[in-house]
Length: 389
Image (tube, rainbow, N blue to C red; front, top):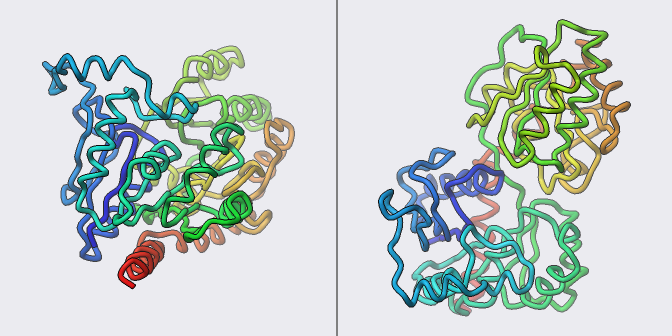
């Protein structure tokens, strides 16, 4: 099959980009032709390694012309000044979204020779619904979840997604939400979880007294709650450290909090690292303190590296990934006291850490690419077969 992924940008750092690259590589390994169409490009080198076999097509290069970007024509400049159709409906669009981006996406979708085009977020999926051709199999892959969107966006999704051949969610909870929201939908609504490669390194026999968290540094990721909980734990266990990996809009606020807590010697902000697997493997405890997790790549990544997990009990992924007291511990959202108690419990109970780590590894194996990719292939083949009838 000729399979194409439409993404906001492939050049940044985020879970959608990671899982798209994982899936694309796995499909290539099975002999399919795979390309990624990135709406925007803003840098020379991507944050994640891109398999050289993947063809990457850029629709709008935002870089300065001296750095490889475009010199726009007057007509393009005029389109650039007009808002995107996505912005009119308050749907998050790609970097540089505008009427110019709409035009380029529309032209691409009307001329692509791909058998299957997969959108990778609400904006890309709505582009597929509005501009895609009927003879192309169009698949909406949702990496957030329906109930997370504002009512206006949900309304546009439920009115436009009916034109698509399939809606693919990362959890069964979200799949059921789409079935209820679009009861007359004639396409396929199916859950295919994200794939997470096996940790590339062995976990050492002995690890440092390090608690680790990682991801986009954003207020919704709960790193502030973790820092406050750890500050209390550190008074009781001064030989432990907290390391937080990632970057994002809340970095300065998090750094200031660490200073206000007087924990600069024990809480380390490590910056972005990819892949994170080797770092998880060196951590004694992994914490995912988010306010929400659509799927939870970091959860599976930490489990696969053998790090015993503490996670907030929030929609949607954690509810399907984590079995409390078996492969991880649940704590309340923004609940500093319950997180503090869970940290102390794992620090003081190595046998419980071992139990959670062993069960976590078993959970993570279910999401390795070779276990997940066949579900994508099966879906695409069924959709194509239905077209040929």
